[in-house]
Structures are given as structure tokens and as C-alpha cells.
Length: 417
Image 1: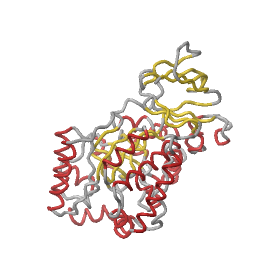
Image 2: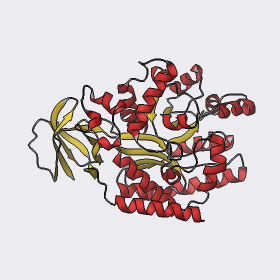
Image 3: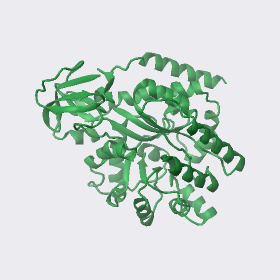
Image 4: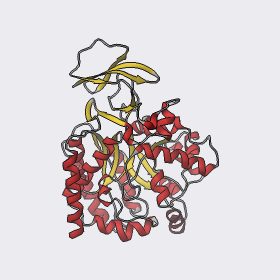
């Protein structure tokens, strides 16, 4: 499909943007081209869409289910028991609801860790966006469970579902306190052999750090480094309880870090060292986490929280500048997953949004990126495009009524089980 966006704003100037075969083919003034679809870009700005680098999409079904408690109690007494009831059908509709919310708020990629990954892939494929999908690996130091998950992963990666190139499959060990050392070493080797990314929670809470010190005599980051786990294939979420030397380890090993500020604040996990990470050269992206701990997937909200939290934590109003936060939520996220997107440039993948410059939250517009980070929310997005295809136009997503209806039905079915 070819798309011509006429007279939109890009970096403060009015341009036409021509999209063909999934990429930005031409950008310039008054382009003389034929397109299958023409969009009026007047009073709209074109921006790269967001990359949500850490979430659990189908947890939309748990939105508001268990709030106002610390992480480990929350997981063991509420979340894991609920999740044991989930079927592939539940996860499919929960993921479609997540994709709908992300599309409506300008996100076209997410990195996921959840159960029933084939159902997740089916939902993403149908919704037309991108994702890196991992199935949670949790063995609780039980060798039999470890063998089960090893076999399960080998079978899965030997027989991958047929999907478009918008979807990547990656490894998903949950955390060092739910996955044994033997399994972590196996995952590291398996990922190396198959050139797979690894998605893991790391150094999220003080309890995780203290338990690691007590049991293993070292901190979580050092523990993973000692077993040779950390490398450029790792996407580590949270990474809060770290020291200066550990940030240097992350940089040296070229580890990718997913910052999830709203979830960290809600669960009182701690303060993410945003500027320290960036100043050391660590590649940082932004994620929402799942709807059970956020409780939404609006990346506009997430980037504002990330900026304000960093300033408050350091008592420095110049910390986490808007342009740095914005880059983390767009270009950095694309880089972490090897996707040629995150910028509006000729030749790059056409993943983008149009925002309404007449929306009250974007008026006046002294600085668009500042407005995007500090003023806007997902309602400012009028059009979302992924891979050169329109997935939302004039704030409408095809099939959204059925998705909402079915998600409500699945939740009621789960509660009745």
C-alpha cells in the first residue's frame, strides 16, 4: 500500500511524506506522486510511534484486580493464582485489548513476556503491529520443571509459528528468584546458539537484592555477570537496585535496559538511575509493564512519569531532559530490537503517528517534543501507521467494539471458573 500524507509538520517545517512498500520513500515539499491513500496532514505533526520495551500484554485482563501492595505478595497471592486459570482464548483476547490500547495511544511495538505465546502471536498478527514475544520460563529451582521448560523451548523454536516479519520470538526467563542457575546457563547457551534475544526482570526490588546477597553472596547484576549471562542480547527490565560498578558492568556487556517507571512507583520498587545509565552509555528504553501493575499502556503517560520521577529522585530539574526521554521511547527502543525504525527518515520503516496540533494539550506549541513528554496523552493521536499500513485512522481501529466486548466476556468467564 502507498500513502501520501500532505502538508504535515516534521521537525518544525511543513512537508509531504510518501510511504511505499512499508517504508518512508520520499519526504519533501509538495511531492508529485501517486498514492493509493491520501491523508490530509494539515494541523498535524508526524512523529515516530512508540516502542514499549517491556510489558505483559494480556494482563489487561487483570487491570485493577489487585492493587496497593508490594511486589512479592502481589505476585504470589493474587497474580499467579489468577494466571493459572488463563486459557489461550483468554490470552488471545487480552492481547488484542492490549494492542487496541497501544494503537490508540501511539505504540506500534511491544516486548512481551507471558503465557500461551502462540495466542499472543495470533493477536498481534491480526492487529497489524510489531512485537517481540517470549513465553515466561519459571522453574523455581525445581530440576523437573527446568527440564520441562527446556524441552518446551526447544520444541517451540524448532517449530515456530508462521508469522510475518513484524513478530520476533525471544527467550523469557522471569527473574533470578524464579529461575535456577542451571536453567539460566542453559538459556544463555541456547540463545547464543540460535541468536535469540533474552527478556528478563532484574534487580527490581530491595528484597531481590537482599535475598541474592544472602543466598549467593553477591548482587543480582554481578550474579548474572559471574555466570556469563549478560551480553548484548539481554533486555533487562527494572534494574533499580544497582551500584555504580554494576552500571559499568551493564555498559561493558552492552546490556539493554527497560525502564518501567509507573509500575516501579506503584509497587514502591525504588528509583531508577536514569541519567547515570545514559551518562555511562547504557542503552535505555521505556516500557509500561503490564496493566496489573501500571494500570494502562499509554506511553505518553509513561514518558512523563519517567521524566518527573528522575527529577524528583535526584532533586535536579535538569535530569531526564525531554529529548532524552523521548529518544528512549522511540529510537532507542527500535535499536534494542534491531528494528530499522524510530525516526521519520527516507528509507526507514514507516512506523509513525499523526498528532493533532489543535488538541488543547498541544496548544500553544513552543516546543513539540516538550509538549509530547509533559503535556500530551494518547488522545492526541489521530492516526497510527505500522509497517506502512494504517492501523488507526481518525481515532478508529477496525473491530474495536468486538475486542472490548470479548475481553469483558473472557474476564467474567475467568472469575466464574
